[in-house]
Image (spheres, rainbow, N blue to C red):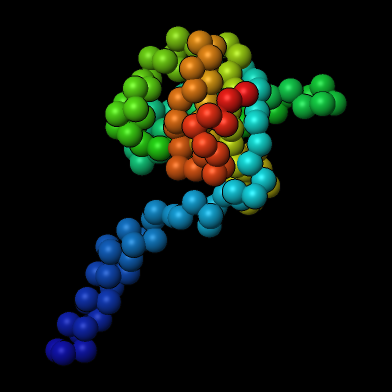
Length: 140
């Protein structure tokens, strides 16, 4: 009986609490903060959901090809607290935007945005990392 009870709690942990403990990630586990860059392109999509909001932008490479970058931001509530709303993105769909982003270590066209400028030119803090820049240095 004692062995069954112990097994039950192990199974409960693995199925219930285990995945939740590993669900969230640290920034440096997934993204490379030593390779952050400025991206300029066209806003093509927005996903306003928890635990992170995302946006997509089509960026033209120097060789003329276009790639879509999928960029992670902080939570929608955190964006709202700093004055950035889903409507800001919706009203800029198809327009040129700039993003300071750190790429994913996996090498795909995915990353984390630190700050962005929509077509109005305002700098919006949207991420966990801003590349160790002062507020005066956050521009495109």
